[in-house]
Image 1 (cartoon, protein in one colour):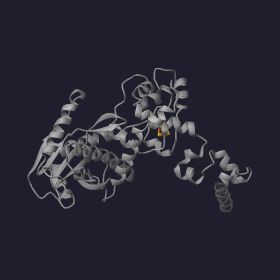
Image 2 (cartoon, helix red, strand yellow; image 1 turned 135 degrees about the vertical axis):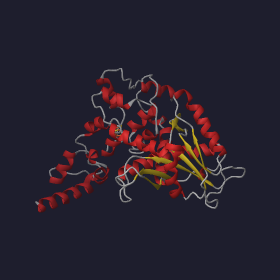
Image 3 (cartoon, helix red, strand yellow; image 1 turned 135 degrees about the horizontal axis):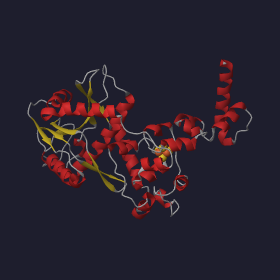
Image 4 (cartoon, protein in one colour; image 1 turned 90 degrees about the horizontal axis):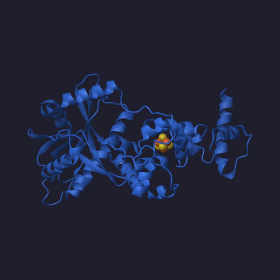
Length: 369
Ligand code: SF4
């Protein structure tokens, strides 16, 4: 399987995953093309560029600068401002909160920082804040390093979280803390941004739970409530909210299991298939055609190949979104749907229900006009 994935990738080093790319895996779990490309670690932005459909991904420079400024303000003076909002949202009763900054470093020292994170978590007691922790998660059989903004530990209710004996974190709860630059105005935030942040937080919660299990602790000590810290209203004053990520966790776990079992998908592909970006664009486009895609409008915000897949799916009912695809089961193209609505095409047995729906919609439209 590893050799097949290496060949699919074209022999170059695998593209690294991060919480954002892992979170994006949950956006279109039914797409075989994405599952294969991600499992192989293909550089999708480069591939999209080579075939003439470059994506427009990532935050704007302005949003990045605002986010970095907000985070620096919160973390100044050993996280003094951040602690003040965490105290409220986590109901920290003690004024003594230890603070450990594990620092940022380059690729060569990631393993060492992950080791320091393990040591700190194994020894955590009382209230503590860990800055720049480094976690790991297995994605399609490869270890991926992940860096949540912070991990907060505090003494919680032991009755909720029975801990193992000889466990220094007994009765304590660990929370993933994520700092985001989008505003919470009058207690409300952009729902798409909150749900994106919730999926990313779920990636960290999962990684933290696996680390705790590895250390012999109860994974349930990691709270499913992640803390989101955002600017309040139109100021840079922070506010913190708890976001329940249980639903995102189960989707993510399912999707990661599916990636781990991508072997069946790979085995069904032609044995010479490769996405080596040194190949001519026509060959790469032909290679993409060999792996089934499942385009949906959600791809536009989650996958670097979305422009190409949308172009490829043009004229299909699936390109109009999942509700349309579900309602028009068996009707693959827009032309077919229009002909069935107009009664100029005889529906197959499978299309009968969708045809009745389309004809009723056409009648209503004609009446309304
Ligand atoms: S953009 Fe294409 S490859 Fe990516 S998830 Fe959507 S259909 Fe799959």
